[in-house]
Image (cartoon, rainbow, N blue to C red; front, side, top):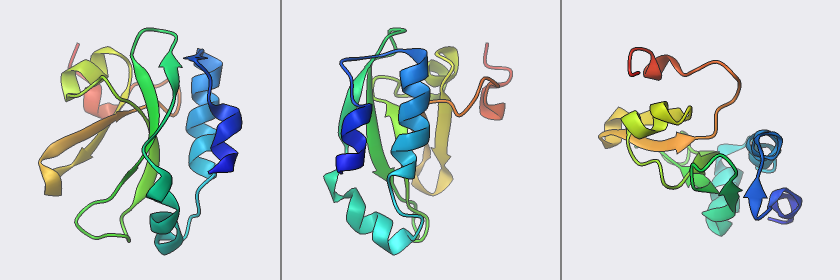
Length: 120
């Protein structure tokens, strides 16, 4: 999607990451059926996290009720379990219909995820 292009950089600083999370997700429709069709361009690498957490991609996720439960998130590609996600300050994306941990999303704010409390 062309609205993602201005958000893609080789290295993503903290402010660029926040912008990718906020504006990248806003590029997509809130209508779940439209979102499902729009997501055909994903996953799309947006850049490398400047803090060393690896590549950041926009990705479409859907639960067992697609497309009604679908969403697009900015995620850290290299953080592949709950513990690594929490240790890096990410936002775990959980889906118990599909076995628990699905992805480590770019955090939506400074507060740690409630899923990460007690994991340090």
